[in-house]
Image (cartoon, rainbow, N blue to C red; front, side, top):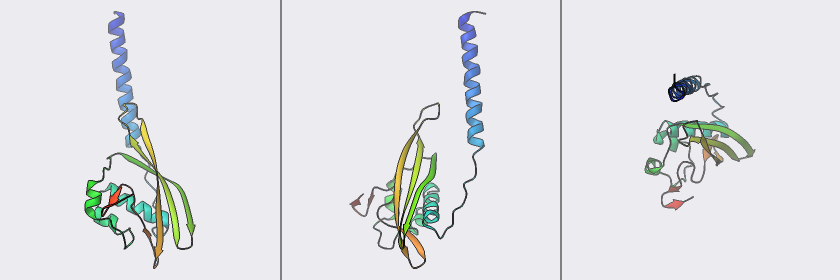
Length: 147
């Protein structure tokens, strides 16, 4: 067997192993634990789930009543299909809270590289519910106001 032919066979074997490994990693995804829905981080989790499900009407229910955001603002937002979102930090002081998350998106690298974006959600307590204030990710403009 010539070196060129052997290198080609080796390349095909390595590619096949890489594809199988990628499929295994994607198939063995751990289920996401559900946070307490009445907590600031639980509110952000539910909001982000609605966003990734592209249920923008549901997402709006987690925003403060004085929000300028409309469904159309979310329609314009770019939301990548493959996201990994992790809770980074939570701080609560009485009726306000900050929830920081790390959002990882694929960068197109065939070996699984990603971009990381850190986002902070500000919340205020309204009655007994936590509501997200301001212009939250993934929007950067709501009702003519820019983040």
